[in-house]
Length: 472
Length: 98
Image 1 (cartoon, rainbow over the protein chains, first blue to last red):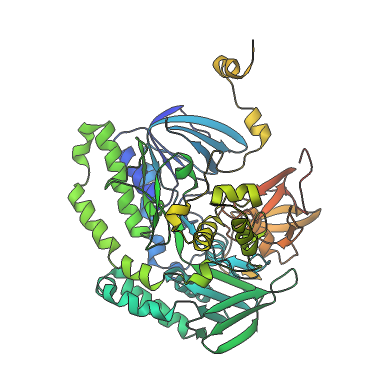
Image 2 (cartoon, rainbow over the protein chains, first blue to last red; image 1 turned 90 degrees about the vertical axis):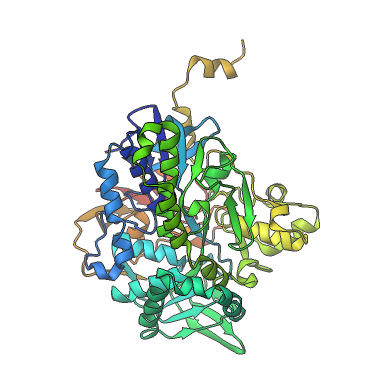
């Protein structure tokens, strides 16, 4: 059964049912605010707790304690007065806090007094030669299939990249009896030294012991090659082999599946389309929204919580969600605010959860050759535009991502720049000897996800709407 | 490429892919069911006709585009399978009306 929003206006609308969105919803609903939670997936959990209410993986230790930690929050939201709608794709949010959402092929429109964006993160593009070949996927894709459908790789499989998720995925695949032939670790050798000054924060964080145990578990079963400096995929219409270089060593290994991962970045499309100011983050190498301590954006009434506010991980996301939810309660129902968790307590918890982040960001800073491709390597997967195409466009006058659209249509395909945007910005910045901040990003607009013309045409119109466009 | 876990005891869901029947599991997305089938489910892109399979499985890459019950360009990774659902693998550009 397809659910649509029961009302046309809410105190709070939360977008995204991952850790931050669930926490914000629980906080707002508990304070008595009318709260609507819209989520694109079939069930709650976002990416990190994906399919938490439906996973076929029954042996709980295979997914790990951090996964099951989400169950309590899902229960809290389900038991609350909040409406939670899944399969709901928000395609527009504007400065008047009006939201357009597509559910089951029809659009509904709701107005909010406060909007909390919890649209999370997506995987950073990993534009290597051959990354569009069938059989090359993100590590997150494999993890999604593992969690929601109990699927694991069973042919020759290579995992390449860096960062905590890569090791977690490898451990989960092995625990479920899946196959991994090789792990190619792209962490740059120089990053270890650069990260050293931040090591104390990491060692005293909860990630340290967990990470070490997991890496040991994986290394006992899978050959790992470190300090990979070159990586490419090849095959005729289907992945057949992966070639890598590590120092002077170069090898080509057969593979049917290549899983890529070099960290996650904020999913900015909806926030940017709403006109929220973002700035280039030189540490995390991505666009992050400009926020105050409560997660408020440059657009009054809209706040951002979770990884969409800058990558912080699931524990941080929950706290940011509670802070943003609490800010909504304080603004809309001041009398209920007294019952909220004290802000000082939340801020202390946030500081603790963020401990070690700078170490991880520095250690796992992706190398330039894996961020800024050259030659025939595809940058824009949708329009099939290569790095050379973009450099050529710069040479004849394209100044930034938005001009480049007119030259090469980059970012104008169905993914709307989600897979190429960061690469385009960094590539053009390098080519024009400017900073990514100076080069800027695609100007994003609604609908942020494609909807059919039929759906748009069947939207109910008021007399005023008709008068606005019909002459006479 | 992928195999199902022995622990998976979810009920079967029957779908039709390019006219052939395929058994999926309740809770699978269309893309997961296609990848789990072991069949050649590569689509061909609208721009150059290059073969592709799903890349991100989380709704951002659009490489899973598929025709579902006659509606083209659906994101297969976001749509759960349903009994009797008809899937067509997209070969190149969409035609008007579908």
